[in-house]
Length: 388
Image (tube, rainbow, N blue to C red; front, side, top):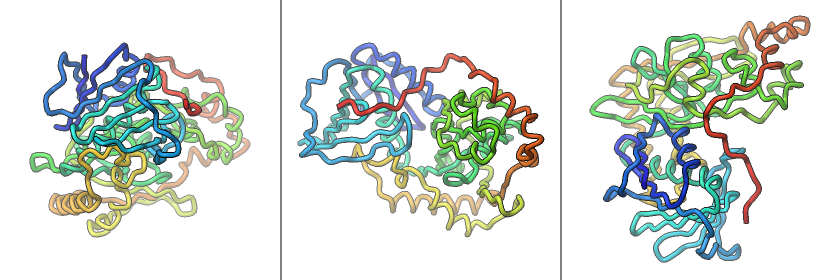
């Protein structure tokens, strides 16, 4: 049995050797509906494929003295992984840590073999392989990836573009809560010219939200982490909590009673900026200013979480930057609305900083007592120590 994972016209197939249901369920929960997923009896021809084997790793592991160390996913928590790499005559052999999963990449035949001792250890390495391969193909064939969240409103994609702490997650939460809009994506969006239409398609990402944002958004109060409830009495301490709560993409949309609409024509860009020292405001900006800004927010080639460690059909940075310039010209031609949005704590959040009022804040009170919503989503992986 094999499974084909398709994003636009780009596909990769996984051939399963053994009972890998838990890994398949995890990938489906994370990748859908952005990826089309289909089980097939035979591997499709001319499609790069991954052969997954469970059980003892019979191949010799990379020797520490010969191997080169790389970062495969630089994010924190359960997604973080590194690799020990040695070259082979066909490509590379990689031991992915902390999962102890061995990956052989044949760059000549353009296929990948994966060995794992347990199905649990497969989840993150397979996610990285599938995402990194397909993301490279998207960029190779004309797409660019922006650090952005977004919604679909009135059939058009409205993107919040920015790097960490700009307000993408907070803004997305507010939009889903207060507007008749569907979720497009959080954190990453692919832009491409599709049949002559400038199109935005969401890229899967865990909805990682801070404890302070959870406390401020009623729909998320039940997700407040029990371990940091003591910080609810002090706003500064609450915002200082580093660990974020992670939800699957569709799971987070459902918290707001919404679905995911994975693709729509581009209808507008908003560049949020958090400023506690200046009042909020909204202003339009020029396409020339956006042309200068957008390279700062490129993901993919410039994101260490999506480094080109596989080395299959690598894409050059110059190629992606040129395509971004072309897409900016499409925005100019289509007169896409462009905004700069300054935001600051809301009136409700400022009232909650009044010591005499804070104990009576409804959302904070719910966070003190609410239990996590029980649903049927696969359990998230746990961060662990290296296997070897």
